[in-house]
Amino acid sequence: MESRKSVQNLAQSIHSLLGFKTRLTSTWADSVCKIINNLSSQDSTDGSQIKFQNCNSDYSEASNENEDADNGAAVSKIYDDLAALTAHLNELNLKKRQALKNFLDLKGNIRVFCRIRPILDEEKFSHLAPVVASDSNNVVLKLANNKTKHYTFDKVFHQGSSQGMEVFSEIAPVIKSVMDGYNVCIFAYGQTGTEKTFTMEGKPDCPGIVPHAINELFKQAVDSNHSFLFTFSMLEIYMGNLRDLLVPKMTKPTDRFTKCLSIINDPKGGIEIDNLVAIGVNDFNQAMNLYRLGRQSRSTASTNANINSSRSHCLIRLSLTSFNAPSRRKETNKIWMIDLGGSERLLKTKAWGRRLEEGKAINLSLSALGDVIIALQKGKPHVPYRNSKLTQVLRDSLGEDSKTLMLVHISPKEEDLCESVCSLGFATWVRRIHLRNEASVEMQ
Image (cartoon, rainbow, N blue to C red; front, side, top):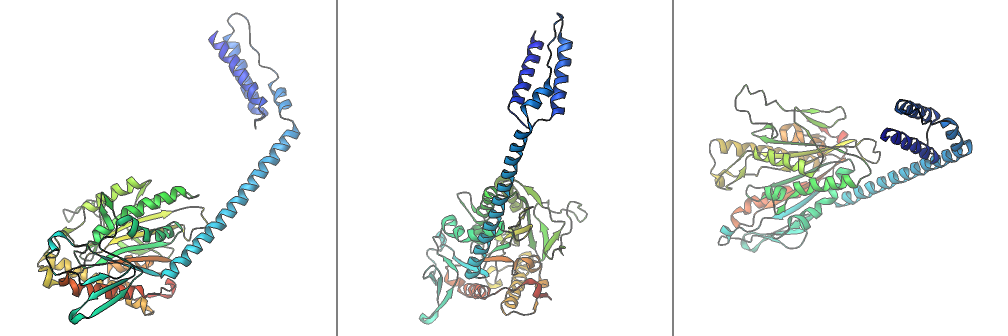
């Protein structure tokens, strides 16, 4: 009896579906009729049979030619409206992208911010205050004999500036450029001990640029009308060599887990790092878990200038790919977030042995970066990107189709005045750059 009831219910359901005039075919209806009749025949133990007949005729009556024509016209109109809305949305996205590009171009091809490190507890009785943030765009250095030196930047963050509301809010427009398909490079520069790592990484209760930027990218991807594929990579440049921070450190010369990383040109003219691990990530938490893993492998050590000194340049790369998105500048692009190793003076660090060699390597790569900056600023036909691994990696992030943001960090201590002058002078050079099309820049 239960089986016969199920068959009856199925027959009623088929009739109901056909009554809704859904887009069913006569072949589909005939197939269902045969199933029902076969089930009915097998279930007739008392000689009675349930017949589901004339399915095809009922279906034909329910779906006449006029109704099909009306439905077809309605569906066609919906597709036309959808195509028109999609075209309009793409046009708006192009206008928004151009407006943002114009806004950033007005701000400068390379934007430069300055951040003054807060005074530490152990420094409260030291000679301080040679550095003053006179307003939101200017820094004043107090020199000897009551002389002063002024520097102007796109933004100056004083000692009490917050990580999110003040620092990252200025960076947010550049993050939008990543979603529009532009390569972006954000890096922290300055002498050792000026809290560059704090600006980039932050702490659990006050996250820095890296977690803020990753979170913002995933938020914008969710709000976008396109789907994105994200991949995460992390490496360091230590003693002039590239090392993948997402793989175990090599313990033996024959360790097969460590592959040689090499910088190559991709078919589209960009820069790629061969053998660098790139892991797909679907959300903020996955990306941050990889970041924390890579951070544990970074080379750090104690020096006289900094108890936890970074002995390498740390580079975080998030690559984005979006297919069928005509409003984007490139199908695949990337953002670099870089915590540069701090410049050092031997007189202050008292480094020797391994620490001395690490400091020399950091200074040499920063000097090479300075040479590239000066060549770009002066519009030289030859730009010495090949002089260091750092500048080779960043070559396609210092071109016309990229956005670069530098945060120069300085100390409030009087004894660091010499380094502050050097850092602020370099940052001033960076701010004067007017980037040209990379095709016109011949690599030396």
